[in-house]
Structure formats: C-alpha cells, structure tokens
Length: 161
Image (cartoon, rainbow, N blue to C red; front, side, top):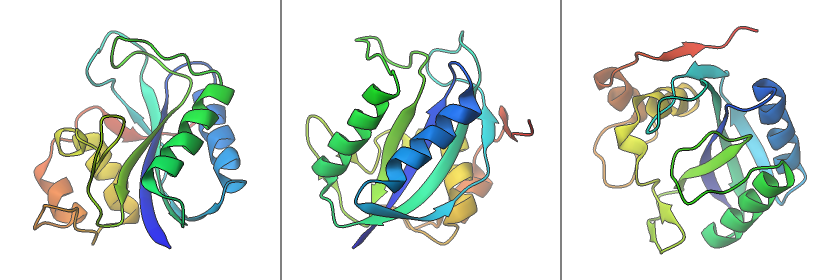
C-alpha cells in the first residue's frame, strides 16, 4: 500500500458541497482515506481574476498505480461536471491533484509526481503540512512543517461557513 497525498479544490457552484461529493466518490474507489485537513479558502493561483477556491488535503492509501489513480481522479472530475480547457488555471467544479505518491517520482507526459508546481504554491504546502507535518517530499531535505514556515501565507484562511 502506498500513501498518497491529494489536494482537492473547487471554485464554482457550492464549493464545499463539491469537495464533500469528491470525498464521497473517493471512498468508493479502491483506496482508504487516512486523514483529511480542514477546509481552507484560498486566492486563485495562475489566473487570478476568478472566484476564490476552497481546498483541502487528503492522505489516502491504495495499491493502485499512479496512472490508475490519475484515471480514477479524472473520471471523478468528469462525473462531477469538470470541463477541461486548453487554457490553464481556469475555474473548476472540482480539481483533484496527486501531490505525492509515497516517495516515488513519476515523470510522464500525462502525470508528474511530485506535483510539478507544489513547491511554488505556499497554500498547498500549508494545507498539506496540517495532515503530514513530518513528511519529507522526494528531492527535499525539509519536512512540510519546515517548508510551510518559510512560505508566504497571504490569501489562505480556514474556511468558516
């Protein structure tokens, strides 16, 4: 069983309900949710003229390969109404990113793990550090706790509905 870290996000429709629906969809797949972070409201990254996101991190375990996981998460996104665009960083009903798959490194055209933009996103580091403070990402010498202390935390707050 591999431990996998995910980041879920939504900024269209009932954002909290979208996150809950995605978690429910994940629970019926061949994986087990081990930990879930609080929900955070974050400013958009990349293209900033869009609604704020709600994000949360999950720690799951599964025997699925990285590519099998990707297929599962893309299917869940499609079923929830996510529309893919050639333009990056567009608003979305749901986004499920595989941040880490154990200590493995995957470098394929369709999938890169660790997530290639993780270290550039302080909000992602902070959210994941909540549930895995002592995890050391592949290629790093610092724990997520240490990485989160060095990052900017503007534009991220615990969501209170």
